[in-house]
Image 1: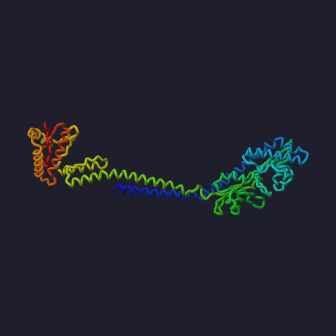
Image 2: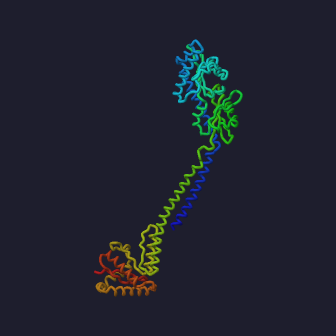
Length: 465
């Protein structure tokens, strides 16, 4: 019984668990690898990178706008000689670089003062680049001084340049723009800071030099390897001002223009998407198998308890019936069990009927559980009124039991009932048990008389005074 209960329920748990595992796994994989969702997330990554770079550039511009109002910035052009101007510019640039490191948690790679001719007056850390023509490489420098406006851009034209720069005009006492203060962060440092805004596939910066779109920097080998595949999407993003996505080289990527850099339509950020929206999506279904294993354990434990709950009383009934078959006819079960107690009670009733034993229906106080009918009540009255109680009490026990058994068998035979199965030892044992129970209930000893009424034989208790 126990094994059958466990086996059936274990099969159910296995079927449901494995089916749930397959459904959850396939659903998770389908959702995590959905091309449209991956494309949408990659576009959002590219837009986030572009927005962050432009926001950082704007912050630096505002910070530089405060620096150019300091007296040290104006004193540069009050110097008499170019050498003195260069020294003053270098000193000023060094102080700006130190302050920028504290303000932005990153040391700038370039801080320079550029005059209206586009030439470097001085830069931080070294006097070697004084007089270099930056205006030729970056025409926007002269245009910004002429217009008196600041801005941000990506500089990669010169041999050693890989900067994300921000610049603001330096004005004389009359408010006229006379130079440009430029602060440049390393391009690789800049994209490393914004890589955490993406799903982890990598970031690249592309620059349009007016002739073609070129890769300026990349945060990963995967981003570098997509230079040829991503060119069309980068061009589309720069020209349209909207994010453009594509696929190639086994990856999904998206480009977004940095409209606030340079004169616009000049720089774009490329984000590389991952193959799935979540890491190891298939592993999300493993807890279902864990729950299934837990279910199997619970089935085994519960099946053991349930099997014992059912098999124990069944074994008791089986052993009792075997004992009755082997001659212990006074065996009764009196089994207290929520499910099988009723069956045991009916078996006891059947045994009493087969053995010809009258059932005691009185309660613990000796009262009848069911009032007797008029037909049943009259013979009992006659027995108690007409019997010689004294003679019954004085009768020897051995003679009493032999006489009672003989009268009971005779009455049964008179009614045509079979008596072969009723033995004297069994009958005597049953009568003695009934006498003990009746004496305990009534508070005085009793003996039984045989009374035949209609088509049944009754054993009536006679209290002994």
